[in-house]
Length: 421
Image (cartoon, rainbow, N blue to C red; front, side, top):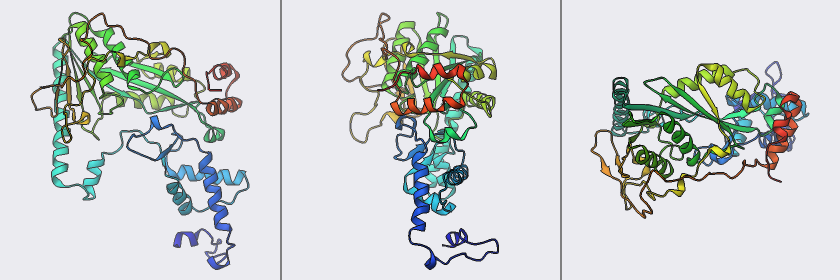
């Protein structure tokens, strides 16, 4: 109540009106302006957000709630609206179940909960042991790769969502923009980096998209001298730990007579070399105008000797058609281990999959349910998309409206984007 009172004082600290003197519709008018503003701000589609969350995430154009409130005040001034105070604004923000979009590598939930005594010592200790075990395992594999030329060790990750256009123009706050994606693979021994870049009309964020990128890279580096490949990633299910990725890697293992091993880092402690690469790219694009996706590709190339590879809809393959394993769930009944419990997954040249629930465990055979066929080197993978992906009609209209802040040289790109009618 004190904060609400402070919103309505003059320069001498004296209330202009007591709560009893306020017009009954004045508070509602203030709240209406906040709701109207927040409803105008574009929200991200659900596939960009955490699967466990029901919140609506704003496009990543606001760093803090304070930034959002500042733009709201400007919105009210421009449109002759009555602005509410911060407390009411943030209350309405929460009531609408909104949240600012933030990268997935936030502070660890378990460590944060432990600091405020909401997690037991036993749970925290086990978590830290898993973190250290993963870190030590990765260091051992890195050292091996530096000595053993028959071993390749990779880390990979998807950069935080990039929006296009990206400009310092207020018009962008209220218009939906084109989502762009940069999937980065890093070879820890050779320091080779490859960035697979596409926008939402060229590909989606399905497991097949990531399987296509990883398969393409592995096909380019595996030769007769390579006997084993180890891939480190976070545990993101749709991106790294799923049956689609498993089909793709098992196909490569049998085709190239090589062992491929996936290793998953502990949740909340998944920092990898790819994060440093993404930081370099983010510094390169900071405060720089981005008018089209190609501008991102150019900045990635300038950031270092990275290898940006622009992919189109023809690039992506549908690995779900292979069906070597119908599932990679290690258990068979309620209470048994599930996919998110997998810590290590091994794809053998003989077409079998093995797994570990902890780095120190022995390998166990993955149950093979509803097997359709054995992997063979001749297996063909069909295209995932037959054509470019249409964007939403509303998004196309918003991008057309944004052309007035974009140089004419880029207008044809936006005019030719396929879209829903």
